Length: 252
Image 1 (cartoon, rainbow, N blue to C red):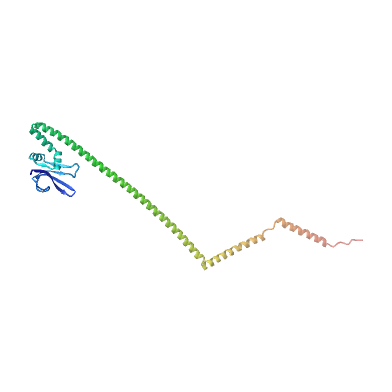
Image 2 (cartoon, helix red, strand yellow; image 1 turned 180 degrees about the vertical axis):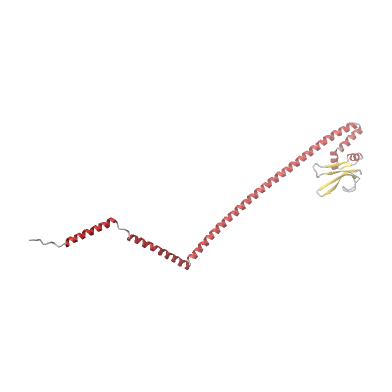
């Protein structure tokens, strides 16, 4: 049975890494192999392939058969195209110089495509990272806005609770003060004190009333009235003198 160019799996779980080997067709996939000619890492983008071009071409010329995956890798690296050109040279369809020129042109185009694919992949990766970063920033902003709104609501609630507590406390203090005043006023001692204060006020107001009465009685009599009274008394005295004078007897 001819030899095969196949992949031998290595690496961790979900992180596969392959060796490109030449093994007996009867050997198991990850068993013994004849020669290792390269490696294949499918995790990175684009996939990384390291291949010994000359050894792979030599084994193809010796009749080794590649598996489907190995054939794709060899085609990607140009081994199969070079093998096809060399077969044409053997048949006389073209010269070695022409075959080499064609292969170099193909290799240049392939490298250009690979570079373009790599730059596109990097640009896509950067765009994806930027989109993720923008999304994360937006999520953080929305979260910060929600937290700020929640905090403002909590502060408003605390202020309202504090105001309500202050109002309730003030009302309670007023009620307690009124109750205390009422208790003080309604005690017998307070009533006696109020009675004494009322009596003292009445006693203090009595001299003022008497002073007002005395002022009324001691008010000065008008001078004109006094003079009238004096003149009236003088006239009465004169009249009394005239009436009391003895009349002289007339001589006959």
